[in-house]
Length: 420
Ligand SMILES: *[C@@H]1O[C@H](CO)[C@@H](O)[C@H](O)[C@H]1NC(C)=O
Ligand SMILES: *[C@@H]1O[C@H](CO)[C@@H](O)[C@H](O)[C@H]1NC(C)=O
Ligand SMILES: *[C@@H]1O[C@H](CO)[C@@H](O)[C@H](O)[C@H]1NC(C)=O
Ligand SMILES: [Cu+2]
Image 1 (cartoon, rainbow, N blue to C red):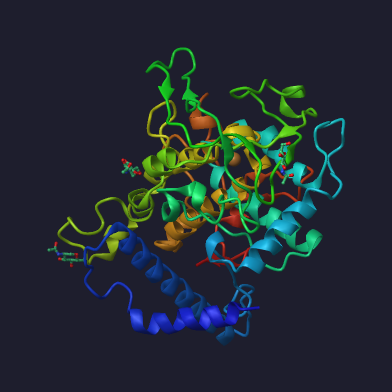
Image 2 (cartoon, protein in one colour):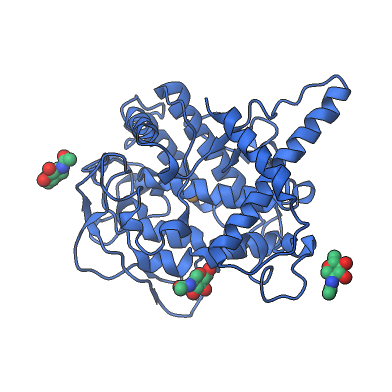
């Protein structure tokens, strides 16, 4: 395990970095993001050590400490062997028997499908609501655990650094179609991009989003010709809705429409920087040495930056990257975890939230509500109470359930990981 050497390297940079003291320079947004992340990591490792010291003095042991913390890494930074190990574990999960009764979901054919089922069943409760971020954090963690404990994977869940490949995601290590990728793009078919249709009464008109550079079946790389069993729930371009509200058996081949248009527009370095620090935190604002400036945006604006404003062109990087994958099942919010690429996208979603929390941990490890996305209904419609830390995170037949409060801190409770 390389964790201890990673930690040593990170701690060494902490000594040199002296976070928050040096005045900030401008630099490209990419450099600003990198610098901010270095500071976050240094602060987190330092606080981990401080916490351990404090507890040691009391004769207690921190359950998550510098020796057992694990780090999730960017997909392209994994070695070829590590990528192969991840791919093999996902394929293994797709061969293990399902735990979902066929009476619940006749389309569930594997352990992998168990995770797709629970997402389909709860889609309308777990998006644009207070449980969104914690639910998907736990979802990923339990998926990672299944890969490790049921399929012998020794690494951790990788993430897709959206901005890193935004000019050509189809050529990234994730989608280039080589033996170490998550499969190639869909074969090119001339087509239009997805259309967002606001429900009756919402107004604003249909929103035409740009297309990717694929559109057809995935025919190269490890998940070439992979069979999708569940969904789609509402139907997709060229694919009718599946039976039983998407829970029925509907075998078909994986399609993708990866391309730069959506990625660049909705998930570039400006996006990533804004989510963590607000678009004004560096450079142009006069007082860039104030730590407080970094504490914006608050939970409500973070959620809007991240998930967009429903039925507007500003769909945010969450939707923007779902549509960067697109295709089938990637273009169907309900069934989207059925594309192996879902999991690296949500790895980055969780990474962003983890970093945002780390900028003001005392407050943000319990901050859940704020704005319309903090309630227990989709965008608070119909109006509902705010989500609570005691609310459940239900994993159905996929894994054990928990509560929101248990997963707010990735360095506490049942969790002990961070991102590099
Ligand atoms: C995927 O299916 C296509 C069309 O049937 C075929 O040409 C291709 O060889 C298959 N690829 C793999 C890796 O099985
Ligand atoms: C980068 O993303 C932001 C939203 O986060 C968007 O407003 C901007 O137009 C994007 N840049 C490009 C070049 O598309
Ligand atoms: C910048 O912020 C610091 C810390 O909040 C404050 O002490 C200082 O007066 C500010 N400087 C200016 C020019 O506003
Ligand atoms: Cu989701």
